Length: 184
Image (cartoon, rainbow, N blue to C red):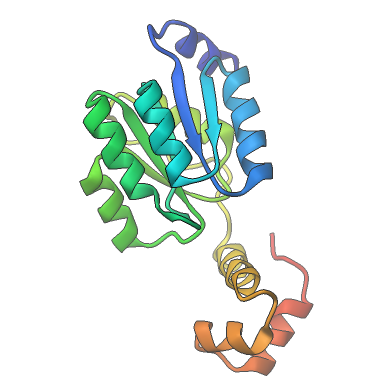
């Protein structure tokens, strides 16, 4: 953490916009990035983010992809219009190639899957265009699958039948998966 803090302290503008509709994640990540030297402004919706960009265009942005009132891609465009040199990172719980390509085409410099570590976010923000190193402790494929199932289950308000339909799996199979502990 100290080497990232020293890199951030040398920056002329440390302003950072952090957009995520998950309040605990937003608060935790905001505090962690502040400890690393950034000056975060925390917002929970596309509307709040666009208002914050108009008030003071940030040098850095960490944006969630899917929000209740729209897509983080709208905020990418607003940041790009207000400040073309801003470095933007997209976060998402729905990591797939199509949305990653969309985010990069819109102007994001990197794309990270949730849950993202604050050091990984800071490294992505501070990277100078070089290829980032792979994470030191990546999630296993089983864990990624479990996280995705849990996310869809929550979005379906814990309705097993609806979740099974959306995941295209048998309801009993889903119930067995949900009854097990999270893989490491």
